[in-house]
Length: 206
Image (cartoon, rainbow, N blue to C red; front, side, top):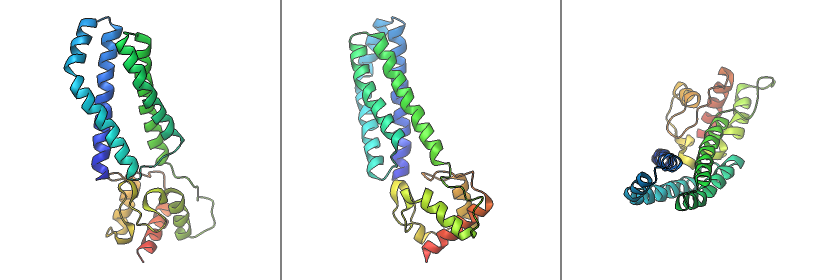
């Protein structure tokens, strides 16, 4: 369910951005007649895309999508871009129209930055004098509880229930290292950290 929402949201955001880029290019290029025709023909699709943009975003948030400072800045940029776009195109104000698209690009950029940050392990165990299992527990508590929960069965943001997982250790390592579905990849984990994390997940099953 969450994976489907994520893909739909990504598609809708892409269409939304392309649509406003086209309108802005026409406005800046003084193609007023073409802009009027394009706006008239795309009025209903624009309403549908805007609605789906909002609906999928709310749906993902309700299903446990992670929030942080960048998330709220992204939302602020999107919200600010809407009135700028409305006024900009209604008044044929090129500055406001361009600014609205810049805000949308900024929101998209922040989303990518946030995605990259999530893939970075939040704790360094390389210098710890601890067993792989202890390292795995620390990594899990620092990086995995937002979606899987402390017990492994929270199932937020499309996360699987780790307490009933049937993945083999090698399969689990592959999913953690490379990601799958809505699961973020963690390519920077060392072999020991990865082994420790899989060991700790096995403890959650018990």
